[in-house]
Amino acid sequence: MSTPEAGGLQTTTANDVKATATFIERLPLQPTDASPITDTIYDSSIETDLFKDVQFLVSEGIALSEVDKADCIRLVLAAREAIAHPNQSGYHVKAAGLTESGEIIIGANDENSICDAYAHGETSVMSQVRAQGEEVRMIGFFKPSEKAEDISINPCGACRDVLEQNAPSDLLIAGGNGKDILVVRQLAEFSRDDFDEISVEEVNLDGIDQAFVALDSAAYGYIPEEKQSELYGVSLIGANELTRARGSFYTNAGYDAIPAGLAAATTFNDTVDPSTPEDLSEIVVVGLGKIPHLLYRDRAALLELDEILRKGGRTIPLPIYLVAVDPETFLPLKAQVTNTEECFPNPFSAGAFGMTEALDRNYKALFDEKI
Ligand SMILES: [Zn+2]
Image 1 (cartoon, protein in one colour):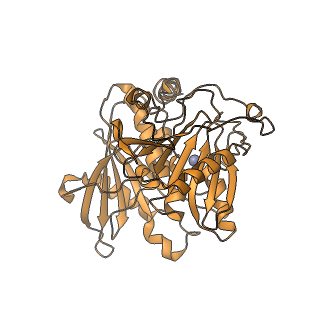
Image 2 (spheres, protein in one colour):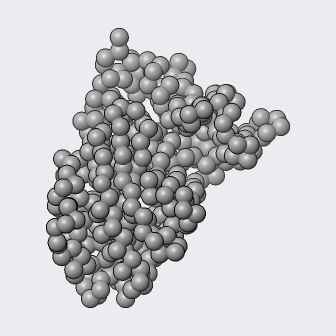
Image 3 (cartoon, helix red, strand yellow):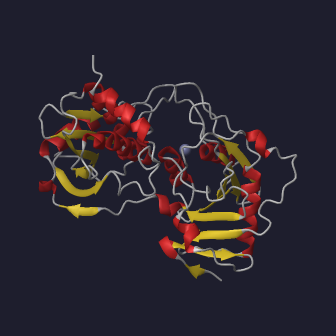
């Protein structure tokens, strides 16, 4: 039995004990910025009574069977054994995947110094699952935190891309920290593509042109032909005609792939006029023949850029226009509109996590300290 609860969550427990609304209200949606806790605290040789009287907090629409509940507990306890190396972020992402054949595979984030050649917890699990020729049935996280309420689940943009491409949208994702609460959500809660249709006349024409140039400039030599239709170009447009930044997909033989939204944010950072911190007004994304599917890694990059720029005083999210261009005539065919927040549900970003100091530093670097 399950009971509708506040905030779209419903509760269900082995003993059908209802969680209090108070608890749900203080349930953080994202990781906190607290000091990392070392893995040694969770040495598996230390006997504990984790999840003895477990209570499940599940999203609306999820009906857990008794087998599902047992799998959630098994999976989160298995994830506890994964050893993370978060020498950049400080976040210990201890993950596990349950395969269709019932096997549990663990993985963790493995970070390096200041480059991005690293593994995330979820991608580490997924690559192992797939290397065994398996499909994933459920993902679990163990959160090494002493705080009972610190049990959020929130995949980053890159991990959402991997899960979206390799797992069903109703994939269950369980998370807990051993304090007798397990949160269970569905992959679909972290994705959104149903944006508002608008007339192409409503989109900044220069923005379309710039994004099309970016699409045309993509270094796609390593992207297989059947995937090339998924490419898009991105432009960042300001009221000031000098505020123009384009972003193109870039790949090389080492597959150091950079998606177009991240590239546009990088271009903007390198070229922005430091005297116009509030100028950027819209983001345009152009795909050939169809409305482009914006990668979640790009949604994360564009939201975070927006959060930095909002330090200049703007209070509403930047609009994002998604435009399909005719492959023959290159004229715009149809368009949709969303914004940096709407397109990235349960956002994984510095602003969403309350990391205001990091945003302040980045804002200062962009506008106060240009040489
Ligand atoms: Zn990730």
